[in-house]
Length: 156
Length: 83
Image: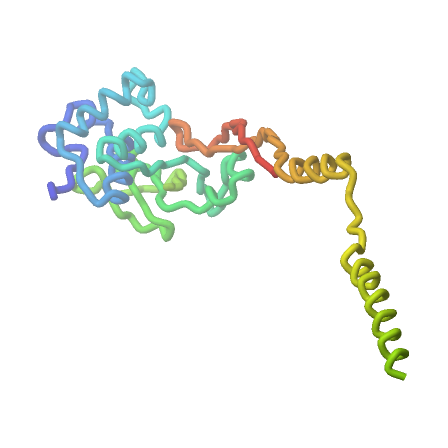
């Protein structure tokens, strides 16, 4: 199995290296679920695909995160699907309205945490239910000043 | 006495055939032809079968690009044969 690549690993597009922390966090969820790692060419291709399909806007900001995870599932040959089901902020969990009709989707497996670094940057990383960081896309991991919120993802 | 005995035997012989004829000739009730037709119709009706069409809606779960579930309803057509 190939090694885990960080957003600033060699071979990745400059855009990913500079602002691809959220994007790389999305892909990492798919990698963990499937048990395989993406290689640089696959990550670059996914970035281009996500941009062409409007999941990433012209400013390289993520517009829709779950479809990016699902693109990664497709690349890894998995039929699994990720859905954004809620948000955890200030100690409270709020689920998306549509999940009230599908209670099973209120079980979340992963969170992507938006944080503020001590260098005054916004950063994203993957955490588990307990809030433990399971993947920081930047190496070395930046020091965190505070947490904004976490997005909850259900994998089915 | 001997003549009397013979006379009784003769009488008996004359009576017995009539008993025999009566027993043999017990008339079996014959059904009219119409009755047989009715029976045939009953036999045929046992083989009559009915084809009942059913349209049953079933819902199939799909996931969209965002991984959100949605359901599509399809109508399935089936035929039930009852005989």
